[in-house]
Image 1 (tube, rainbow, N blue to C red):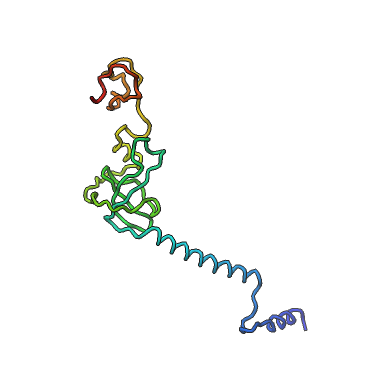
Image 2: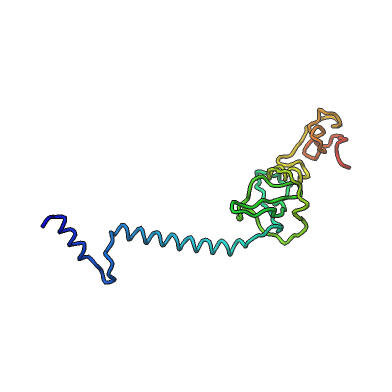
Length: 181
């Protein structure tokens, strides 16, 4: 008998109680790991679907705005409406326009506010920072201040040039005609 026949004979005798031939320990470990990953994925999807309910078109949502994209005086969220639902993500519109790009489900929260309709959304695409700046009372990210010494009614005043009113940070106790009274 040759070595090849001996190996074949040994392998044919290696059968466990279930009748199937034994596999290599590394293959068994890989199969166990694969089953564990599938179970973990199922648990993760179940937990995610519980925490993030399904959102349909026309639902109002709150999109959080990072502190980097807004000023201290701006609201932390932008109210929007779901315009389109797809496999890739959600298209969300606001009162100023459509947010550029698609957002994942974990990037916004469902709200009970129902004042914004998809028909009322302008068809212009804007970044989230541009939308916040358009709704901002103080001009968006970063405060504008001028440091002028005059009455602030000339184009030399940076506030006047930007179309903004001077505020208390601009100049202390000086006469200014560019302030809301």
